Length: 582
Image (cartoon, rainbow, N blue to C red; front, top):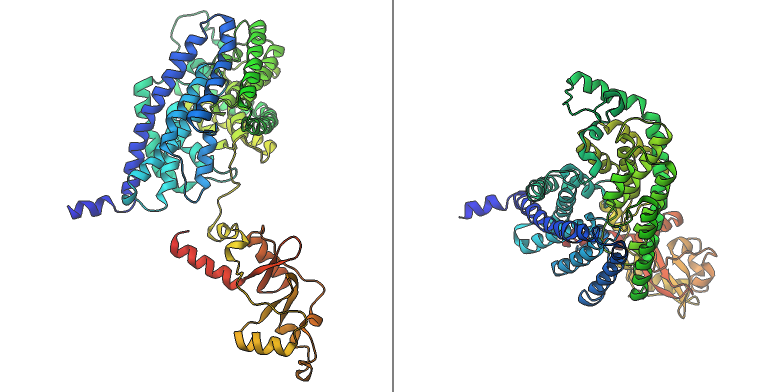
């Protein structure tokens, strides 16, 4: 028995086993959530009279706000952002008891027509379940396994809802950082995503979540006019060499289009990121009733406008119907541009009104619309090519996750559009800059010392220090502080006001015979620097290096003395944190 316990607790065995279990549980939870929101609610809403369709989003927003405010005790409407927040916390915390309420709020928002995506609640569910697994089996795991299971759960959530396991893994690894990835969680995330995908597709089915990609002609970008398939029911067979030639043609001939689309998507993603950040700020205001009613009224107006323009309420729900409509080559550029604006407005309004859902699918929808618009401008005759490239470019720019966006294209299209998708995604990243729709994203992973330097200066502050008044003599400073207490530098304080630092350097310029007649205040330099309580250890170390000192006084904004920080105290803090795992 002891032998089995040793094997079970050795190395990464427990976390890998729990990653597989997490993937299976997440798949079941998300399958139920998708069935209720998409099949039970949204599908029925879309078959109701237009006035009922228009009122449904307002009802969903009100219900979601009531659930979060009262049942959830003012719980946040954030979903995927909670994964990023928890990931960067020293002790990640996503209470499992909050999950049913968050899913219920997402169900009312999306199921009743809010323009947000299913992946937000899916990522939140995966993250919460992953953390719960770590809490339940804590004694089998190491301290740093908590973030690994958190990431594995998020990967499982994305893999399930998009039926794309590799995309789930890459998104979970990319999401916490704008310019980096979390490599340590790779293997557990692979196992969780693979398990989640297998369980999910056996419960829901294999069809792609992007409707137009279920058409094999769109998946490989064939020219329907040239092949005359539309007017024939015969089966067309392709040799492998023919397909290779076709893919090569796509890669070479559409590079310019991918570059142009990348620029458009970068600008669009940057704009949507700014609007999404603004909307999230609005969703945290206290006036939830007014916010829900105004948001619902605006969404109702968009429904009527959409029905008038497109003969269908394309602003309702995550946007799958809008993607189906836009890939029709007979649609004019004006209507496509209008749909882009209406869908963007619907998403931002839903988010600002406190709706619960994700932005992955809304970003994908905007990318598909923008891609179709660009494709028609360029006169492309390859069905599905530019909508797919737009999806990758816009999604990558909005979430700062270009690798997972391109992988989603690769998994959804069988690899036909990977090269132009890479070009479009890379250009969109350059144009979008540092903007992202996701909150709590850090730029890069911080190393051991870098993480220490982000701590506040107060973490190494010593307030129990002796000071010397400005009228004290040099002899008193030498005998009481230098010889008596082995202090090489002492703060000079007049009452509470910090005047400067006296050290052996200043005393060395004075003759021994003058010590009794010279005050320390007369030796102070006119340029004295001090740290502020709001500084980080990095700021403090930089100031020390600039002044070529090993100790620095800390004062408030009025110059009142608070304490001292030294290079030795910073080193001791690092040793303490290492020993305690802090």
